Amino acid sequence: MDLGIKGKVAVVAGASKGIGKAIALGLAQEGAKIAICARNKAILQESAQEIGKISGTEVLPIVADVSKESEARGFIKKAVQKWGTVDILITNAGGPPPAHFLETNSEMWQEAFNLTLMSALNMAWEAIPYMQKQKWGRIITMTSISVKQPINRLMLSNSVRAAVVGWTKTLADELAKDNILVNSVCPGYTLTERVKSLAQSIAKQKDISEREVFNDWEKQIPLGRLAKPEEIANLVVFLASERASYLTGLVIQADGGYYRGLL
Image: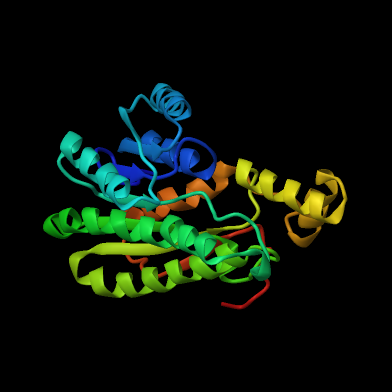
């Protein structure tokens, strides 16, 4: 199936590893031009080379900490300097640290706000004018299943990611007239470094093994396993494509059936 995004310019934040990297690779394999960012230069360049080698597509690595306004905006500006526009924006960033409410403080909340919500807003402010000019665009915010079913001890993530979804839904309505589609993807438990780190934290707190933590998660998932990053990426790539031309304002979980709600 031709997804109709060959030659489109896609920018993917937090793409040196995990789900972000899988998304960048998936878009590159469909022929999109790719700009990726992350904080660690060495890992970022290695990932860019790997994505380029597998896909045969040019990949532009840009070192950026998207929790900082200048760097989040600079990421988009550098992609535009290279290719002249932005067609597809994937907002993605590592989540805030696990904590119960009384373990948090105002500084932690501000950091979570900057990393999770403001990073998306800052990238969007830079990218949207180009999408409006060409009357075509895709914005996909990467959130978490926690926006539909809060996860224990993820007080910061549960709260701030919900704000991202509220913004996403409102933005979809505002930009529909410009043929810019805005959706949110909510991964469930996925085999990434962040989830492994969360398992370590829970195991330490409960004085059990990491394997026991994973076993508990797997029992709650009807498919009986955690997702692979590429399984989340497949959904994102579809939403970024021409084939998803009538889909906007959606909040879609990819969780193996973990979420039990009706909506």
